[in-house]
Amino acid sequence: MTKATSVSAERVKGRESVIRVAAIQMEPRVGDKAGNVERQRSLIADAAGQGVRLMVLPELGNTGYIFNTRDEVAELAEEVPGGPTCAMWIDACREGNVYVCAGITERDGGRFYNSAALVGPGGFIGKYRKVHLWDEEKLFFEPGDLGLPVFHLPFGRVGVMICYDGWHPEVARILALQGADIICDPTCWVLVPGIVTAENPISAWVHMASAHVNGVFMICADRCGVERGCTFLGNSCVLGPAGFVAGPASFDKTEVLSAEINLVQARYKHWTDLADPFADRRTDLYDRLLGYRPPR
Image 1 (cartoon, rainbow, N blue to C red):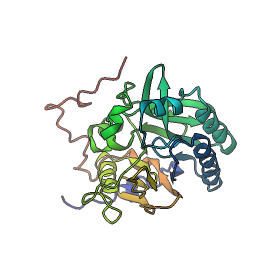
Image 2 (cartoon, rainbow, N blue to C red):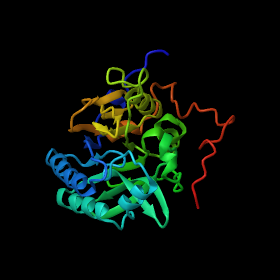
Image 3 (tube, one colour):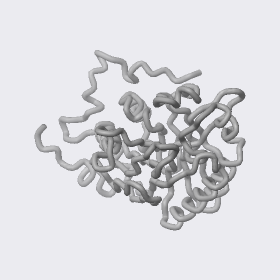
């Protein structure tokens, strides 16, 4: 590849849409929904006090992640947006004039979903249900059935994925092709001995590559700590078209990892005058949205 002059420095000069975002890393305690949500409220207030406009909380952060039985899931799950967790998030957003994307254990009738809610000062905006279920999640949750929506917020377009979705490159690409500037990623990255470790946090690198090749920002909020024998990676991060913007965070501490991003950088997909990864796609060989059909 020849001289790839900086997209951000030259092409977006004087065209700024700058906001402060944050990945909130925390340690939920399985089963302690009231305590988890109260800690989240405090962290949301901390982030709002730093000028953060959009923040992301971890996957299943209101309940904890490692379940033993479906009865345990049923006891902790709640409707989205009709339950107490979403009500608290909405109150916190109104108080801080912020937007929150956060993982939640969702109940819909007799079905359970690993979901993320997007809420703001005006209330509930939308939700996403995890499409690719990791390992034992398949024992407790239904695969997501809401597709890959992109939500239009006052400052830009926001898509959502959850953790293992990031190992399926179609997800970020489809969100980017639908116009997402930012992808929020509530996650529970786990240590995998000999593969994913605190010293070699492959999960963060996978998402960094995805942000780069799709020309988007990503906010990856992992949890930390040990739950029922499972160790989590931490290493939350804010990523952009040129790589890491902030982080990775620590392995084992609660953190509000914030950064300013210029969303205009996500709207110039070309690297040079002759190298535009989206325009250069061979859509004569594959369709524009990789076969994606939004649910009706």
